[in-house]
Length: 82
Image 1 (cartoon, rainbow, N blue to C red):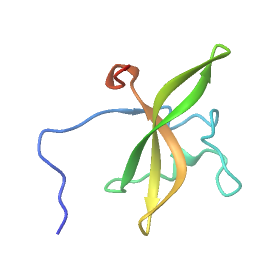
Image 2 (image 1 turned 30 degrees about the vertical axis):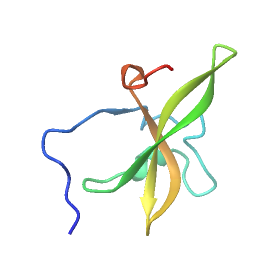
Image 3 (image 1 turned 180 degrees about the vertical axis):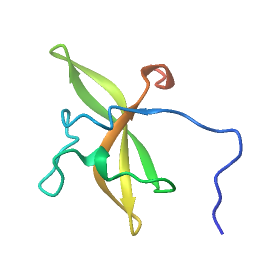
Image 4 (image 1 turned 60 degrees about the vertical axis):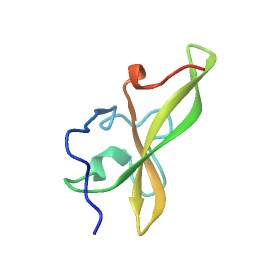
């Protein structure tokens, strides 16, 4: 049985926004479908910020082992530049 490691937490921000890919054909705002104990996956991707491409850590809802909707992002300080 999988379990969450104790003491490891982080914030997913922007779950109530529908910008930056957080909207799809099924949901006006994909973060609105999140519920307690849902699984999310964090993926590094490139996003446009002020007209400049930058790295970001996006949070995707997981359903039946498949990444579905982008629901938000982690805070920028969790991203290591390298």
